[in-house]
Amino acid sequence: MKAIFKREFKAYFTSPIGYVILAVYFFFLGLLFSVSYAYGDSDITSVIGGVTLLSAFAIPILTMRLISEDKKNKTDQALITAPVKISGIVLGKFFAAFLVFAICFAPTVIFRAIIGAYVDIGITSYLYALFGMLLLGAALISIGMFISSLTESPVIAAILSIAVNMVVVYMSSFAQMAKNSFLSGLFESMAFIDRYQNFTENIFSVPDVVYFVTIAAAFIFLTVRSLEKKRWS
Amino acid sequence: MIEVNGLYKSYGTNMAVKNVSFTINKGEIVGFLGPNGAGKSTIMNILTGYISLSRGRVQIDGFDILESPENAKKRIGYLPEIPPLYVEMTVREYLIFIYDLKKVKFPKEPHIEEVMSLVGLLDVSSRLIKNLSKGYRQRVGLAAALIGNPDVIILDEPTVGLDPKQIIEIRNLISRLGENHTIILSSHILSEIQAVCDRVIIINKGEIVADDLLDNLSSNLSKNSKLSLKVKGDAEKIFQSLSDIEQAEEISVSATEQDGIFEFIIKPQENCDITEIVSKTVTENGGIILSYLTDNATLEQIFLRLTTEQIEEQFDEMEEEENETVEETETLEEAEEEKEDNNESDI
Image (cartoon, one colour):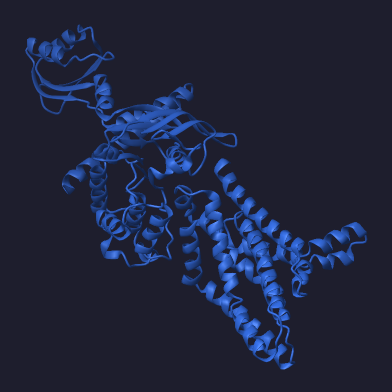
């Protein structure tokens, strides 16, 4: 797992993808922070929450080639015939993408320090918001990785993942359309954006943590199965 | 070292591998031979755990590939048909990655250095793989298979796309590795198998059609092969007395360009050695033997005979097709002869 994690993480920065994603996040986070700073807003949870839509688009770019490219170039032969478990391969790839995603939020540490110099507010609201965003990211990364395992084309993986992300993140918008109260309730409770909302209100919401972790674990498991299935078909 | 029992692999309704069983002992160099699409790569992919089997059992050094895959895989170095290379890495980076991936216990730097010098990669160690030629990429793949010094080395068509000099180098390397490794090598190039392997397993349409030592295979078949001799003398008289030989199944005679010299072609009965009796008969009848040729079967001929026999069984009633395969046999034999000539001139 360690070798694959290292290779995948390095691969993000031997191509422009890693740099571009970091630059885009840094730019938007910086923009949101400077706007909220100009308005004298001391709450930087809104800065972190502000990039949810960006994540729905950017994470598929991070995950699109994770497995599809291995299948296309047959490099999966090197991985699968090595004495490692398939779950190790998948986890290595997952954590590499996750680490890049986490680094995207590095500037928020500086933002928090700047705010902290002026206002004495608790650190928990910032930590919860960041933690929530990382959980949301982990869930989206695992979904993107699973979709990447279904195709040999990174482009198709990216397009599909973006479509799926729009649905899972903004599912609550469908809730208003659904006439059935059960369905609208279901959509609302499943939407990532609503689940994430709780973290921005300085609440450590255990059900939401469980929800995101379950989704991430489920799609990591499905990715492992998808690779296993290829061997058995 | 490698034990395969009743191996089947199906892709949907298509049976790619049917009832394949063999055992390979430590230190053997075994060649998998078969036409394209015969199932060689499928069997190799199953042995290395890349794809799973539908039925049967595969054991590497006593470890079942399904039950304890990690232990089995640890003992194998595999070079697939297309080397699985991360082209955006340098040669050294890639080999370090493979080293880490295989969790090798040897000291890192010296081991990688040793493998690179073994396959001749030291000059290009810091170049990106994507900038390397096909031959060098093949060597990087081979180096990756050798990392960790595994007991079993499985090479799927290792010399495809290499120039003649590289082919000879790789063959020499394989022969050297064979001194203390078990090697399986697949190829559809027969001279390659002949050059490096002790034993050959011929596969056709997913089944083993022959599994024997190379020497046995060719001597078995040469027992049944025809004798061709040029004789100076009374053709009719010699023909008559040759016809009396019981073991001779078929005799034909034809005049050559030179006056008074005839060519006899004699087909013996199965498993009969008639060389002695033929030469005795000819000399007794006043003939002088000018040349004496035994059609010593080359691997090419064995291969074609075995694979076409199967086809003939399947299409017994389709005589036209048989004729085609015979024609093919001839043209291929000619091609092989030419190739051998070229090889000789190379050397």
